[in-house]
Image 1 (tube, rainbow, N blue to C red):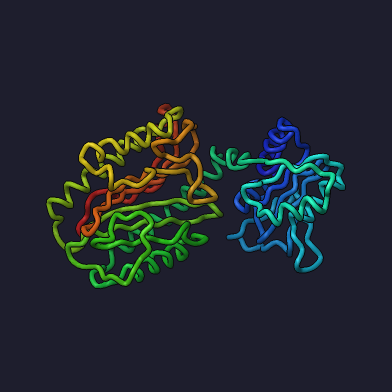
Image 2: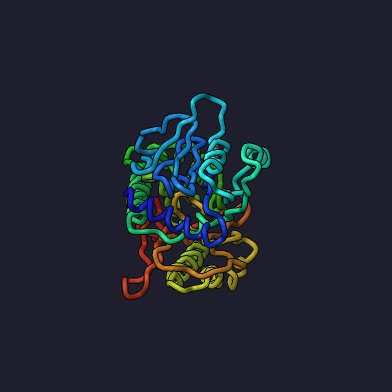
Length: 368
């Protein structure tokens, strides 16, 4: 993998050079891991004028879940506690003869930025902006493979839960069991706090589980994700508990299913992000549920669970091939509950079979 990380750093260096900076300091953990293979706590990456360095406050953690630093990348460990790797790296950049240093201003605090300026007052600090995040949008096949394995783990954990007795168990208990199963099947851990919503809580995006118990006739909505080698995927499904679904449940489920399918089918290279969002929203808007829809119907995934691109009405930009995204329309009716269906897919051209579905648990409305 050393050549992969080196190639990523080269692409970033080219962007920095084009912007007039011969050096860059990367501090956002996901960006450090993308470029260096690992992001020990507090570590920063210096793309120096003469040498790249991973600067850490302590020895890098060698646990596989934390990633492994690129073996070709020198590591500088601070000699004692209390030091700031970002400040140290800024001084090293000045020692290498850099006249300017591009930094991730959106991640740095004002206090930290001032300390960096004081250690090298002649060094001009410029804003790197979201250059690394932009590089991360399109994934290589190794990254997609990690997402694919994470999706398999999430599917397996969810499938096992559906085979167990659910009536009488609390949302909190079910969420904890799902997260345990993720780890049992090889995940680093959950990609985000697992959401389990029953009855009036179902279909609510980001619902935090409570002590409400599952009852017969409830909608049960579940949203979970696995992290595998740092990469995070997402799946969401809705079921009915213990009995045949009521007419209103079938109608609402079919609407959300149609919306989700339209969003998935719109995932083609070159499609505008807002058009994908519009495709997923259209059926639900027409049925009168515009006020019950979330602000976005999907987003990118990778080293973070919520990355660019954003699938939203005002989103800018177009999709590229090899971009993993979620498609997750849902409707929540206050006091009654609702439906959410969520998949992780990879944008692929039609010649390669169209969008690749990573999360494959059935979307049939099952009575459990």
